[in-house]
Image: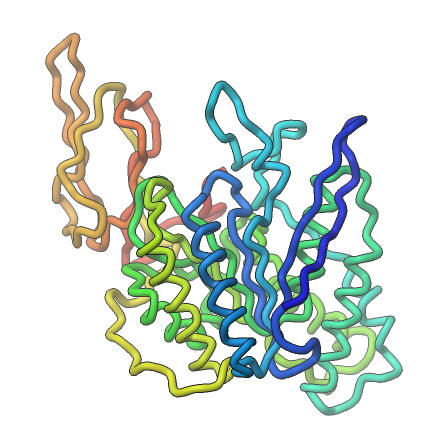
Length: 377
């Protein structure tokens, strides 16, 4: 294992932070796998899972079982980890700018990447893909980063730019194990969903947020267009990396047993991919089929009051089933919120008091009905 420390520029005098990544296997060997955790710094279960994964990979490397390069970043957001306010960790938004740490990622102009490799492209898709990934990583590292926020994003993107599989570990408020990915990545990631026991897989090619896992596939399509426009329409480029956001249940699900099991599920997947030698365990049944993110229902409180959930996380609900009651202790009015779609109740809020309009839960659904931005702020 090699440890890489990337210094972030100081935001103010007398401060200094760094991003630490752990590199297993020989660089340039086999498929590169990239795993990061807690980009939203208050999502601690993801961090613990990455730590367990790091321990397992160190043992496997010592046994000589790694045949790929695997990079793990257990603490992907040292900035957010320092944001304590009145005893609460505020890790979703950057305090200086108000920006969500996992929204609005940007990559270099595609024309610069293609121009760097133009004369070396040929009719071998694998060759072209390797060239483009290396050039992309180089161009990312050249991006201007005045603030530590921008520098953090640059370092994370550079670490992932030449990977074939990118896993971004998060967690929700109160939730089952579930994941987000795009349609073209899903066939490669379905085995991982099975090993993890994910009760939901939400698919979207563009959810509108430019999150870390989504920006690379979208950018890859731009690279395809740029090659066709400026070099030639018949030069092939391989597929983009298989990418996913994995939601390691809820924020309070900080458990050695759960984190170890989730890390072991990722190891099973790496064996399945051939990144680790061995025979992978048989694929378990998929707990729930993949569904479109545009078909998931976001439930919002129609009024203010005390939230009393009547459905448990992981319940399979039918349209019309009661999800929760909202109790007004002043008027004695009890308002029941019901499911509008049939699916798995995969996420709900952690606070049991609602303002009018408060998001209170999400249910998977088979039929797309939402448009525009599909992810929250």
